[in-house]
Figure 1 (tube, one colour):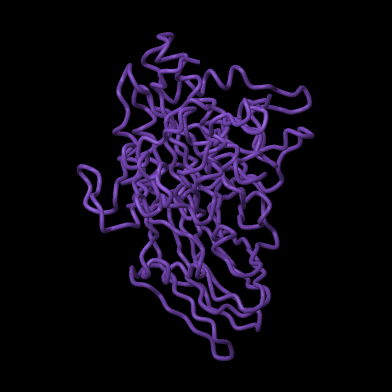
Figure 2 (cartoon, rainbow, N blue to C red):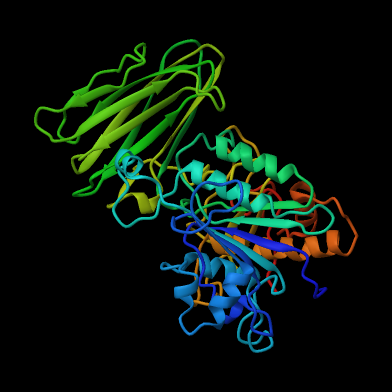
Length: 465
């Protein structure tokens, strides 16, 4: 590895970074962090071209790490530790000559964005529990734009690592954020790595595929709701050109008859003997992919089993429906489908086409991590691309598990690859698709597994050293 460090890892995890730790410093004690954009601090200077937050430069960070009170100079930090752990795995300096700790790309420069959390009205609408971090697409998109501008073609490639995910969206890569990631990933000297989430074993996905012969077909989805659940927002996706109607039965036996979706207004329902309130919104042609979408906002759901009967009408010979509950952190109690499927559980925006999407496995015993998101994308496109170690991964803050750890290892590997490709002149115009192709060619494939594989990736798993 060349020591001029012309490549960089860019991290977008939301929680920030503990910049004064030794794993983010050079051997002379200076910081390897080129910049921190803290979107939550409004009393400083924002980056050029942006109107909010505060940008801290490498000079300011170096001043802070030399200070007896670093936070008095650069007050940005990571209270949760998630962003720090991810950054240390991807690009932490070797400690104790690599014996005690070493990140995947220990000579990489780092840029970190600490995202501003979603505003109160969005948290209220989506019924997100207090204290759970949540971010809106607009702020994430701004962060991606900021990270993207650090690239210098043929001089300084950029690897963007995203440790965020959601169950809201079509799970086909058609969201605004996913499409923006695609645009970045197509650019020269950029690589985008996204973890596939940890929803594979949560019971939060319902899917049915059925034959049709021009007549209406009904499918039943049953949801078990725990005690004292404040509520949740759930999405139901259909397929063109079929249309849907929905009936809802409460645990107490009250029934909302099949809802007429001819009106574009929000339909509000309440129950005589239960406190539950349900608001239903319908979009016949969703602007991202054109499919039909029904959104349920369920407030104070009665504990027990809720039954959703979905009637589908069409004449194309087949049809399928998908329903997703929120990701686990956005639910206060156990809420799950009784007849769920673990597949098509990769979180958005990891379904973006050109990004490198990773699932997680346990390198200790070569077993798939049971909670890892699984493919394929809705509609059958091959995702995830590869599986990477994500169980009990060593970080500067102790061992951690999850797809974000797998993404961090992959991002560090991508940074090392870009050093060889761009800085050393072997493939000076490399980008995400090319890096993905190299990783796929080098992935290990088991003779006992059929590929493409919904769990292990379309093309195999990266073996840890």
